[in-house]
Image (cartoon, rainbow, N blue to C red):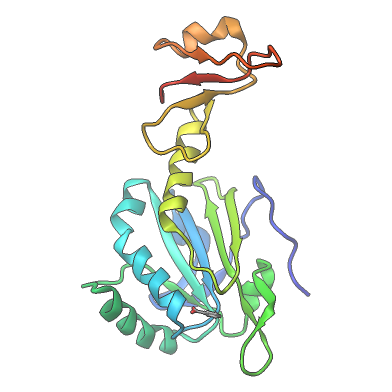
Length: 222
Ligand code: BEZ
C-alpha cells in the first residue's frame, strides 16, 4: 500500500532513516532550515551520478538559501558509501557534504509515494522515480516535482523556485515565466489598486490588453 500523495501546504511527514552519514530523524536533522529531499532509482546508475555530483557542487548555493539537501536511493548504506567515491571522482569533488538515505526496503519510497510502476529493476521490483520535495522551516511541503528515471533534474531550476518561494512569502508578488533573481515580478491579483503606492513605492506598469482588464501589473523585484 502506498502512502497518500502529498499536496503543497501539507505537513511533510517526519521519518527516521539510515543514511550515509548515520541515523537521521528528518525533523531533527532539518532543525530550523528548509530541506530538499530528492530520490533516485538506484546506486551506481549514470544519470543519478550526475545529479548527486551536481547537488554536491551546489551546496554553497543551497546553504546561501538556508536549504539542506538530502538524497534517497533504494540501496544500502554500504552501497551508498562506495558510490559516493565514484560520484566524487566523476564530479571532481573534494568532499560530499550531504546524506543519502538508504531506503533498500523501499519503506520511505512507499510512504512518500515515490515508486515508478513503469521502471523496474532486474528483479521486476519498481524503482523510485526522481521525486523532488522542498520542505520549509515549518515542515510544510512547498514544492513537489516528479521526473521519470530517464530524465535528470535541472537543479538550477530548483534553486530558482526556492528563490521565488522565499521572495513571494514576504512580498505581494508572483514571479512570471522564466523569472530569475532580480527580474521583474507580477503584482498579485489580490492587491487592490489603492494599496499599490504603499506596497510598490518604485512603481508598477499596467499592461493594456484587449479585454481591458488591468491584471497584468509589472513591478521591479521588491
Ligand atoms: C540512471 O540513473 O541513469 C537511470 C536509472 C534508472 C533508469 C534509467 C536511468
